[in-house]
Length: 112
Image (cartoon, rainbow, N blue to C red; front, side, top):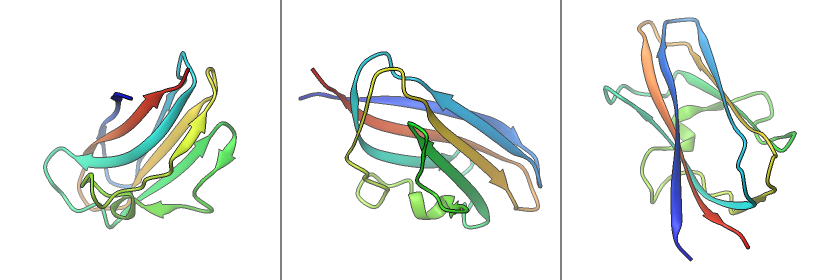
């Protein structure tokens, strides 16, 4: 089955600020991988991420964005089915001393 990619961009997030991004798939999907990539290759160790999928929080408190990862081999691989119309939510909080610009990349398969 082919995989597809959906990218959510945070735009520029200044120090101490955050951005929230959502996506609502128009078909049932299975999330294979999630990666977070900073446009200037800045470290994401001091960037916090909050994740909620179909109303279920997958980050109790938060998870450092570096843990989600940007390498397809070493990233979050939830293998999670998501129903059509369910919201996929990410909040990215920048605790660095400079601004960041992140892409949240969701690799998924369409089901059915």
